[in-house]
Length: 160
Length: 261
Ligand SMILES: Cc1cc2nc3c(=O)[nH]c(=O)nc-3n(C[C@H](O)[C@H](O)[C@H](O)COP(=O)(O)OP(=O)(O)OC[C@H]3O[C@@H](n4cnc5c(N)ncnc54)[C@H](O)[C@@H]3O)c2cc1C
Ligand code: FES
Ligand code: FES
View: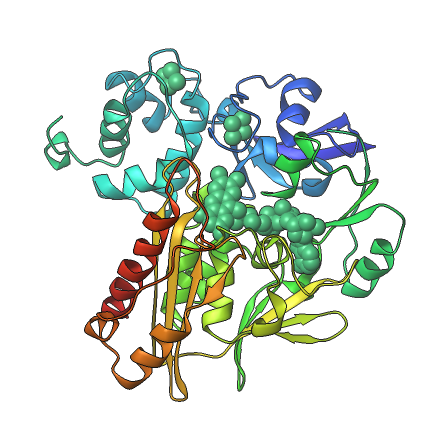
C-alpha cells in the first residue's frame, strides 16, 4: 500500500507492507538515512523523530498507522540556508557527540524538550533524555549542549 | 516481524467487527506489542489499530470519577489528569520515557497486565472500573495474574473510570535498565477506607496488601505500618532483586507513598 506523509514540510510517498516501520519507511522508502536504528527494540532512542510535533521512537510505530502525519526528521533540522540550527550548533560547540550514532535521536528529543520547556533545569534535561542512550559521551556534554541551546550558561551545570 | 494486514477503523463498533476475524489483534500504542512481534512472541494476521478512534481518546470528569479513554496516551494523562487526580498523572509521567509516553496508552497497559507495569496499581488502588465494548469490570475482578485479565478474546477496553481519592501517591522503585517498576506501590485514601496496591513484586501480578489497608484506614501515617511485614513467599525473584528484597521494598515504599500522599 502506498503511504504518504508530510516529511520535513514536503509530501512524500513510498510503498509499504503492514509491517513496515516508520523507521524503514523513512530510511528505505524515502532514503532519509539520518534517522538511525540502534536497537530496534524501543530502548535506545536513536530513531526518534517527531510525529505531529511529538517525539516518538520510529522503530516502534507502523508507517501505515501514521499515514498522513506531519513528520520531522534530523534532515529537517538545519536552517533554511543550510547552516546548523541552534541545537545542532550547540552539540558541535560543546562536543555533544563522538561517534554520532545517537545524535539524530538526541537532537530530535532535545528539540522536543525545548519546545515544551524552553529553559529546563539540568535534572529536567537528564530526565527527558532518559530514553536516548549514548555509548560514547557519558552524557555530560550532551546536557551541556542542551543547556547552552536553551540560552542558559554552563554555570547551571553541576561539576563533572 | 511476520507480515500482517493493518486496518484502522474510526469507531469502536468497526474495531469490534474487525477483531472478529481469524488471527486479529488490537494495536494501540504498540509500545509493548510491536517489540513482542519483532521477537516473534506474537504473530497476528490482522492488526486492528485503535489510534484512529476519537471516542476512545481523552479525559472527562463525571459523577463516577475521572473517565479516561482506553486509547489515551500516557503523555496526555500526565498533563490532563493533573488537575483532577495528581497521583495518577504523576504515575503516567514516569512511565518509560517521553517518546514511549507519546504512543503508549492506558488501555494497552491494562490489557497487557505486565506484572511490573504501573497502571494496574492505580486501577486496583482506586477501585477503578474497566469499561469495555461489552460490559463494566471492577478492578478487583479484572486482574487475574501475570499477563492475565478478565478480558475475553476481541474485547476492547474503551475507557477506565477512576473514583477520585482524598489523598493518594504512587512510589516506584524503578528497575534502571527497563524503567518498569522493580516494585511500585499505589496508596489511595477514600472516605470508605484506604486501598494499597502493589505492582512488580508478586508472581501473581498486582495485588492489594490487606493488612496495610486495615492499619492505614485507622491511622493514615507511615508509623501505622511498623508492626507489619510482607511474606517473601510468592514474590518475584530475578537478577534485579530476591524475594526478600522485594518483600522489604513493598513495606518501605508503602510508607513512602503514605508520607507523599
Ligand atoms: C522503553 C520502555 C519503557 C517502558 N516503561 C514502562 C514503565 O515504566 N511502566 C509501565 O507501566 N509500562 C512501561 N512500558 C510499557 C508501555 O507503558 C506500553 O505503552 C504499555 O504497556 C502498552 O500500551 P500500548 O498502548 O503501547 O499497547 P500495545 O503495545 O499496542 O498493546 C499491548 C497489548 O494490549 C492489547 N490492547 C491494546 N489496547 C487495547 C484495548 N484498548 N483493549 C483491549 N486490548 C488492548 C494489544 O492487543 C496487546 O496485546 C515501557 C515500554 C517501553 C518500550
Ligand atoms: S532503534 Fe528505535 S529505540 Fe533503538
Ligand atoms: S556519540 Fe556515540 S553513541 Fe552517542
